[in-house]
Length: 140
Image (cartoon, rainbow, N blue to C red):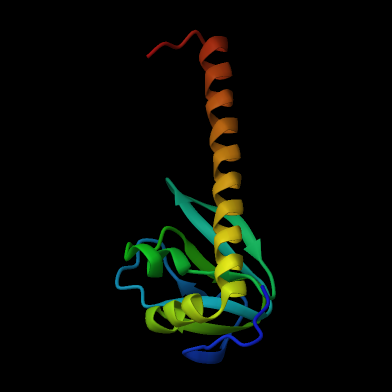
């Protein structure tokens, strides 16, 4: 993401490798993050297993869904490497959306790509489940 001209609530918050930035199901989410340097894993708990959904790099952002919807965090964010992040609270995020068309376009494009990836993964899972049901003659 092109970060020129964006407003931030806080700049250059430091995390060490392995630090938890936020946890899945966390409530009262007040910030989203933009990666200034380093890498961040987005992790979802499935049963007792942590599954890495994606690894984000410099210029990527995360945590915006909770700002947009007001919902709990849908996944955890964990520093994959030492990293520096900028934050935006809801007010700053909305100000950037209204004043910076490039930022708005980048947010929309990224959300659309993430939705496409989720759709692809869901289709793959449904196909795998259907094949297993046929192999093991499972109905229901």
